[in-house]
Length: 160
Ligand SMILES: [Zn+2]
Image (cartoon, helix red, strand yellow):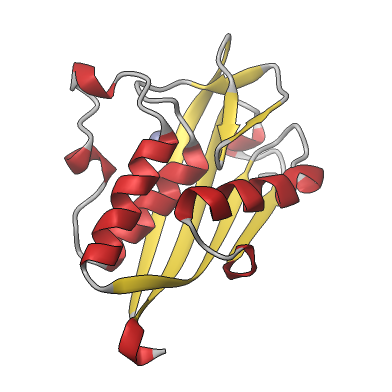
């Protein structure tokens, strides 16, 4: 078995869509980024890369590479899952938390989980998404940023 951990943070700015796990969430501001800024997918991809010891998103998709401009979260996720499966592993389960002051995400959690299930080609029962505010503290609590963390367990076919 392997375990991986990933974390990401983006500033929130006007005029950008707020993307969380492949879902565009209705909001006044979205993630500032060179890529599409999907904070949750970035955290998950880093957890997947980390679990197989394959560096991080910035290594695979440099943010000074013009080819990575507006890069879709789905493309990064497919790349990370591809490396995981190539290494002979399958995702056992994935547990994530999104920190966002507003809007409240709780009613969107089922949609975000099913979006991730489809992007990662994984049973939705193996995916947990939790949402928290930052209780008003630091940049996330002041509504200036969004943060996500993810933990993933990988299993080899013969370890199941
Ligand atoms: Zn990011």
